[in-house]
Amino acid sequence: MKVTVHFLFGIFGNITALFLFLAPIITFKRIIRHKGTEKFSGVPYMMALLNCLLSAWYGLPVVSPNNLLVSTINGTGSAIELIYVTIFLIYAPKREKAKLFGIFSFVVLVFSTVALVSLLALEAGKTRAVFCGFAASIFSIIMYASPLLIMKTVIKTKSVEFMPFFLSLFVFLCGTSWFVFGLLGRDPFVAVSNGFGCGLGVAQLILYFIYKDNKGTTVTVEPIDIESVQITGLPKESKDQSQSNVSHDQAQVDRLEHVVV
Image (cartoon, rainbow, N blue to C red; front, side):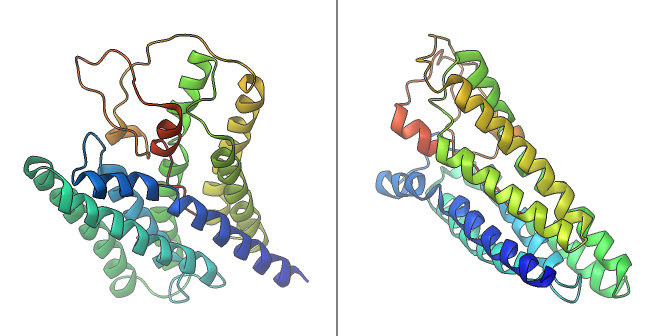
């Protein structure tokens, strides 16, 4: 019975995580249609790719037992993120393209180092699982922490315009399902990082219900450096841009996070 419940939570986690991986598609349709990345940043997608690769590697039987469902969704996520990254490399300006190639090289280097060290220097079993689990958990927590700035914006503007309900709901469902999956499988690396995500999902939903009927106040939102702290598709604001002119619908699309297990 416990094995069946464990498996079902893994399947549900795969479904909710897939929704979140596919969320930025509209943003990338815009990039392709305009044949340029405009002010969108490709860095978040690079980091999401690294997280997916590390998590997929951790879920393999050669690293940790009973976590194959972690590998399936993160393997799929890796493929999706790689497509996003490729689109950025194709349409980014020359100067930005060089920067992105550098970050992409870093992603490949980190993943290759973790994979090779775990295979060649560490024996199969607990030591290998702990090493890979720590690496995957660190980036999972970073990914889940990405909504913190948008939550700050919600509180400041007293409006949920930039925090769509269904996205917040799926963040909660995804974090909760993988948290339970980790608990049932007695895997602290899956449970802890996704427990953090579950808590943030609850916080987002609470904020939504507090401010959902509020039209908000006219507040100039300070520019956010998404390259360092937020895994979204929000365009960076220029220095002379004092106020966001993004429409309600487009803003909901552009701030879609990558949440991974």
